Amino acid sequence: MESDTESQDRIKTTERIFQIVELLMRKDGLSFTEVANHLDLSRSSAYRHLTSLERQGYVIKESEKYYPGMQFLDIGEYVRTRKSVYEMIEPKIGKLAERTDERAEFIVEEHGTGIFVHREVGENAVHTNTRIGRSIPLHASAAGKAILAHYPTQRVEEIVESQGLEELTQHTITDADELLDELTEIRETSIAYNDQELIEGLRAVGVPILDGDDVIGGISITGPTSRFQGEKLKNEYPDLLLGVANELELNIAFRDE
Image 1 (cartoon, rainbow, N blue to C red):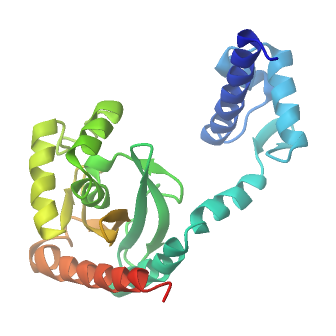
Image 2: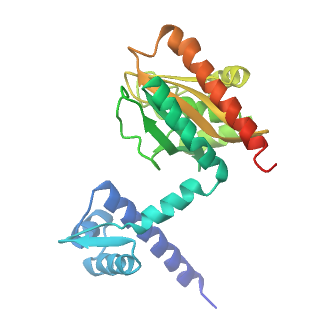
């Protein structure tokens, strides 16, 4: 029977492996010595972890540096397409980007943060580092607020307590009561806005995608403040998003019939 000490050692090893993978991604490759220095590991320990990951296909070595391997691409694609509704949403995001010439996205909530599942950019879209799989704070995102607005208040409070309300720009909501008030308004209209709350100079409009009372995720359109204003911001884009959401929700409701 495994002792408590052995169990804790296994947990620490598992945590360390994921720390290494995330570090390799964040630093765009490191030598085993650099990994050891960053994580305060012995050189031999860092080498053993990296060798094990390489043997399993999760890390590759190029010259003297290690990088995450293509095995993660297979896992990522499985995660992204695991739910059939995610695949139903993907072509709609492409059409939104094409129709608006802006950036269109679909995010889901996981562990209290927003995760990009689908993302397409139109001809005039502003390019940012919102790659697939990247996480963003829900409270500063239009699609994220659309998701939160359709969660029970207790769940929202749990997310705020665990994730905090980080001030990303001078426009970010950092007060919990102010956020709850805005979520109440969003719940009534199903339309959420991000007014330079995530990135200075960018605005976004978002709506939730629902399956009955369950929140699947949120879709949004993002662009520069110079284009996201007036009629386009207040009526054209919200109406477009609500139409897409309604169509998706009907398809989702009747997908098994």
